[in-house]
Image 1: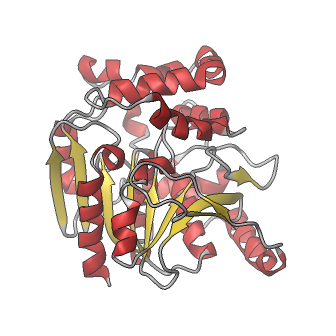
Image 2: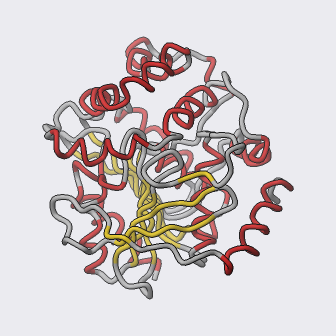
Length: 336
């Protein structure tokens, strides 16, 4: 069952959908390795959002959704998408709430970044696009959204590729300190718990997020052009509010949107993932250690593989696109 307010919102959005004007389809931005003009920027309405997403491949192809994290955007999948399209898949790469051209429908909707919200956004996008099931791939926040969808709606997920592993949050357990070595990696989260951190993100979002890229992927020598193509997405008017809420909520320092209370109660149990899953992890990840990711097998009760990729860091799809695409294709082939 879902929260009554959320149910009413979903029904209202569905009823209104036929009357919505046709939105323009724009060429998506493309990066190195992606065929120019291949991705179309489209929009879909859910109960609370107008989600901007990039779509490639035939509409009749088996769907694959690729989910980015913080502080990234769909550019992370520019070199993952072409092999999936060549294999005949319909590839959908959304901008998460607070990123790019994704917008809230109402001014008074809480700008929540909690895990239940981003997981529900993913499932509602599938509903809006009339996708009964898909293969999901994601990292960081996007990986968490995919985890939530697979754990709570397993019938909608035919396969799951996770960079960085199981990431459903243990909010009740967040009061327990990690090792000092891991605590120092989380400095930015503690920074965001303060109003100084909010002001810092507001004033210096591009500089701060670029620093996180460098710290989390120390072996990746990305250039300014690569970073700037993504950083444009941080100019979204809700970016700061969504990010700050995400990092405060996960430590119990901010209340969640009541619309997601029931889902958060389910996630508090840290439910297992039963769908076929491949976890990819960068050996050089500067935020999530390989040891921690490898220890998460207990959360996966279906077919499960763990693959450690040498050298690369946190942004697995952008740093290891071939390995990411291969994992998606492996699960998609079995899902058809």
